[in-house]
Image 1: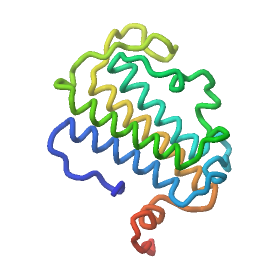
Image 2 (image 1 turned 180 degrees about the horizontal axis):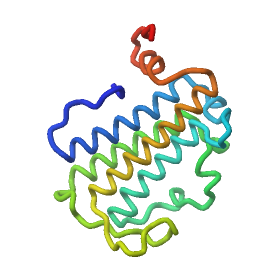
Image 3 (image 1 turned 135 degrees about the vertical axis):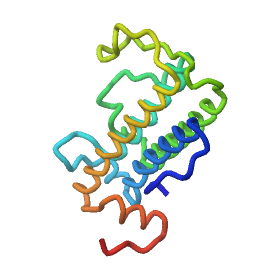
Image 4 (image 1 turned 90 degrees about the vertical axis):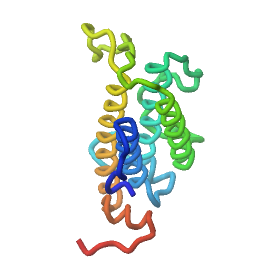
Length: 185
């Protein structure tokens, strides 16, 4: 249940559990939507729920595979159009975005569980102006905390988009997704 994180056994498990909770919150915002609704941008921003899910799958895979593990991603995972990165394109569906996000989550978990030291250095990328120039390395721990932060930020965006779209909010959506009756509050 994304309403609270399950009990954790250690720091690594806790970081992965909190990341999964934020992914679940984002997925809950998409519960019951059509592809058309997942593409909709009903708020003042240009964000859509489907676009946020697509973006976060790409962000997570970039951080874990390319930045942390220093592996080159296939061409289709390289971002060449930042606007397209944040929306579902022709041929992309909500189901595809959710499936891709689930695959990325499994990959992240497998990679992180194999790393023996959360203090292992991760080189700071030099390809964006917002990355610090005076820091050479972050740690695996820092990368996971950053992904939790990024996912939580965008899950909040998705909450606003969903409420703007059809008035639905997180807790009633979570109850519906889990097959539970809603609460009067």
